[in-house]
Amino acid sequence: MWDLVRDDVTGRRDSRVARRRTESAERNRADSSHPLTTLRIRLLETRPRESAGVVPDAGTWAQIDAELADGLARAEREAADEIRYVR
Image (cartoon, rainbow, N blue to C red; front, side, top):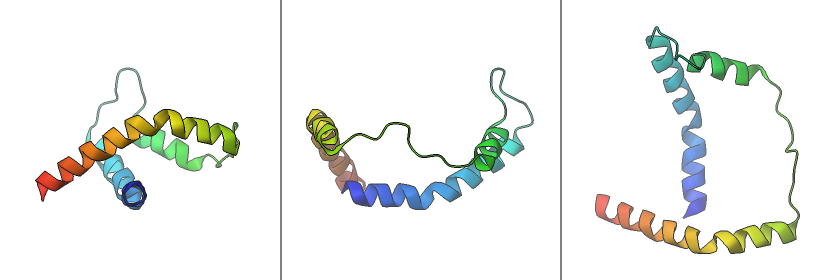
C-alpha cells in the first residue's frame, strides 16, 4: 500500500508545485515573515541537488523500521478504513 501511496504522491508533485506557484502568484501580498511561495520554490529549483549528509546503515534502518512498525500499521489500518468508506 505504501508503495502505491508514494508513487501517487511522487506523480502529483509537479502539478502541486505548479498549482502552488500559480496560487501564490495570484496573491499579491507577501507573508509577514516569509518570502512568497513562488520565490521560495524558484530558489529551490535553482539550487543544485546534494547527497544526504547522513546515510544510515542497514542495521540503523532496521532499528528505525522496528520503532515505527506499530505506528505504521495503525496508520495503514486507518488509511484503509478511510479509503474503504470513501468508495
